[in-house]
Length: 255
Image (cartoon, rainbow, N blue to C red):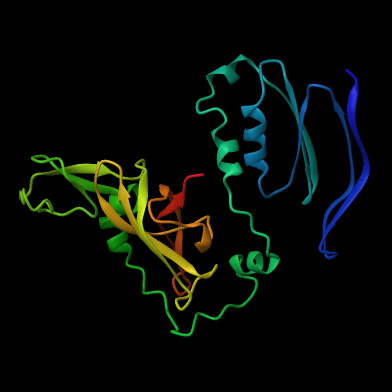
């Protein structure tokens, strides 16, 4: 096939400091999908390429940095069985770009950080509590009344419906796959945040249920009451004393 793109001995330097590519050459034929991958994002880009292929297509995967490798894949009929095709590409298109290299260094723990004017400290992590509440923490499982059908989070023995009030008639009810809307929100510039201001608000879930969550992947000025959101599982804090990372669900605007 005819070549539609040729790159010879390309060199890329980020901010005149970081050498990203050096001596990279490519020859791309018409109808082929080519990705250039490094350590960060390698898996995501390969999946995105697979989401756009059909049986018989070839994918060249070339890595650079920490050594160099090249792999050639040929797509088979099995690609037709790929579920949720195009989903990762959709998620990547909804990402919030990190345009500050200083923030990146801070996120990676390379730059020192001030905890904040209120000197907040992460409370000691209780591993026994993490184990007891694993369904709520990892799966966002609340409860639903078997009598009136009212869902609630976190799990309680008593139905919160004032017209019901049934005791010990609850069943597990997951909220992680439920969408919702922002009932109210705020941006806090006083509390410590890796990416200030800290954003959090109350979410009303479709089908019932309400809880407050951190809000992620957005700017304060882009939020509004009634905005649709979905749940995403993210890191919430780092207990540096015990080298423990705490995770929980956050609200992410639906774009």
